Image 1 (cartoon, rainbow, N blue to C red):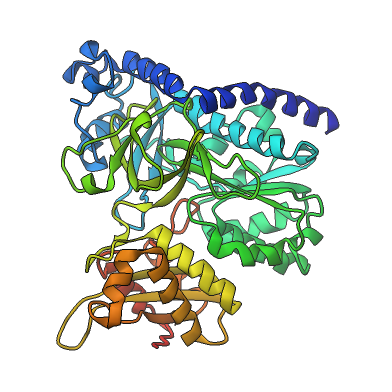
Image 2 (image 1 turned 180 degrees about the vertical axis):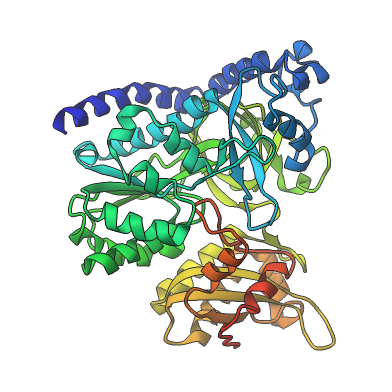
Length: 508
């Protein structure tokens, strides 16, 4: 194992130079990638339609329309049926299945051999490289890496098993050296039935020397609780004494910090955030104890940025990397090495640094509350939830919020459903801190809350254990890539959750 440790460390050293290149020469790196993508797309059906042969620069490229999933789906459907050279010039063998939210309709994102190798795998190497730069003495490779993968599903047109969560596709295509150092076995990792899968995973991995986990916090909590149940141990370090780091993504980690401190007491374990989506690997944490992420500029994705005031426009104004500003909200627009062209991924970010380019995820273009001009985004909600938990000793499993609209019986407000692991001793105090923090971090919300003129104090319900899990299960959305929508501008989700059997409503 010591030899393997040394070899893998040596392999990762080659990435340090590349990461330094896009720290020091970000515009050049993106321009070179842009030229590569345009060249690969020129003779595809899409490239011919929009005359990629005449594109010489990004200004020329802007005549290509921006695309939502619904707009580009007819092309993806043809690829899924087996037609070649539609969006990308090399074969598309895999499709990442993702809803992005808990909507019933699934998305099928093309995954090329280039995007597997040069985006997802390279992103993983970059993350490991950043970790080792900050922790040179770590013996991470002395044990196993645990990934809570998704599962395969059949192509709805051909019946082939070539669709699945991006985590499942990554696990299924890992190089042999990476497979040697991971757990659990492939037959367990790719199981479809999640309750049985968690049980079998817990039994299998508790017998291994696991040193790191790469997963979504929500599902990791479920697995770690099951491991403690089957082993009878008090914390996870009693199971895995050499555990080093948790690589997490998909949802904000702040609300889960106190939960993980109980799993991993002391300062031994590090936490590193990644931004890895079905469409590509976009950023990773490169500083110790930071929630900022370095934008990955040479990993097969060309970035454009849509200012907040343009989110709803059919043909929005877009900015290049050299045009963005600090602390402004932008929607990501991506062009990728799997044939997504000027694609609206639906995520919003803000830049925390321009040298190098570091970001924080602020939410979704469709996941916000702006029913009364308050412009509440996920970042605001998670900051407020984190502070309320910290100041009241509470820990949470999940939450969601939606507006209460004006009516004869109701005044305007925000309604929250929170599933606590450890509830606050004083729920009223929790709500007050939540409300006060939202007013502090969002001036629009604060102005609407002034003297209760437009918005009343938040309404909060404490959900019984398992409420969100049961809701996701009912919708067929149990899995590593599925998550509860934090915010919604409609009441669709919250009404479904509030109607769950046995739900306990504690209304302030």
